[in-house]
Image (cartoon, rainbow, N blue to C red; front, side, top):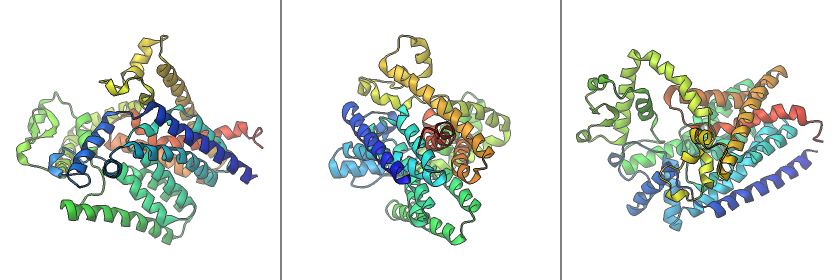
Length: 418
């Protein structure tokens, strides 16, 4: 019986992967602002014959080094980002199978098939491979690490976690879920060492390579403290005068004459935020609900891939933003209709994910809940404590919501699935 489910899953994944490549072929590259920034920095690296960053002093902050260096490799080898976009489209396709495989390990083949269908039917999962943003490779390597861990390939899992972290410094949220799961399952301590060894070897390799070439040890992007200052600080406050490194009232701008590199700037932002926090604890806590709302209220970003004339739009998100969708109703474009259909589907996933937690607790499926629930909680907490709210930020957590939704919906569909 499980072989039948596996064969069905392969067919679904194959068609889904083909659909990803078709989306790339039909709609082409999507010039998101961050994606354009990656390409601009990558071109500079190729021109200088090095990987990112060219010079730590020439950039205001350290961006996602894995994501940008992937673009560097594509430009250096092929002179174009299209081969990388094809690779990302294939990753997105294989991601569907990883959702199936992880669900099968945590639950059973019925939940795995339902989760796969939920993932494939999710409109926001199409067009993801049309940009060089970090979400696709980060989720792909994180899910790969979870699957390898569940199959007891801990060294390779650690390696995948480290690679994922280089694309987006959030692998810790998946690692937290996995470690708690391993503890719950009473995994032998040497398995923790295998996982840690794989992770540390890659991180040390990245850090030492940077140290030899750049004379600085760093392993991942560093933007959190800058973001905290940018979104937490009251820019109109005269308290900015208390921080002599600030340029005017903007806490993100540091006097250029100091000659700080991006890592030193990050240290300044950290120290200034920690100086700001004791006198503004209530303000810091007050901002958390707003961050939560901004992170989860919308799921529109990926539909920029389908906008006509997207390469000529000054502000690409406007047509599919929540206020514009409200103002344009009922005279929506096709993309706006698709966006609203996706919003309904997205809210359904969130609701069913919550119901999946309640159902899992009632059925005492505690071991199956640990990884998805811990990952969602850890990811949300990370954004609330050291981040800011954006719709893109919930995307790495959506496979976990889909696993929980699959568990809950199988309860109603199991009679029809033989």
